[in-house]
Length: 153
Image (cartoon, rainbow, N blue to C red):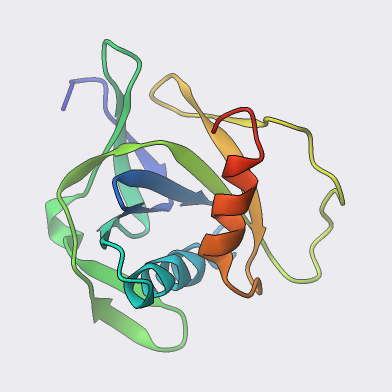
């Protein structure tokens, strides 16, 4: 990792080498949606792992790549609201490709968000932003559909 890493409030995972960071305010369901992605991937026979839950160190490499690193103190731990803390397969570091904004039920959200939105990172750089409702059925499938229909595919 580089010296310019910064702490980001979010949950980061990797599914088949695609790094995804879930963003949103505290209590919005970042961990729950990330857990749904991980579970859906596992049932489909895909590799998946947690990078970090609640806080992630992010850095922008010289080539523009965005990397995520877990804090040692929370390695492999994920808090599932109302259920407690669970142990998950995890990786120490991984490249991030997308940011997912969690849309909470009943929240006021644009029906049609801007095309090709970007999420600016505190370390510099940005990631393509995908919006997914917390109560989505098959959220990983929706993510893949949205990604494949965007200019970022």
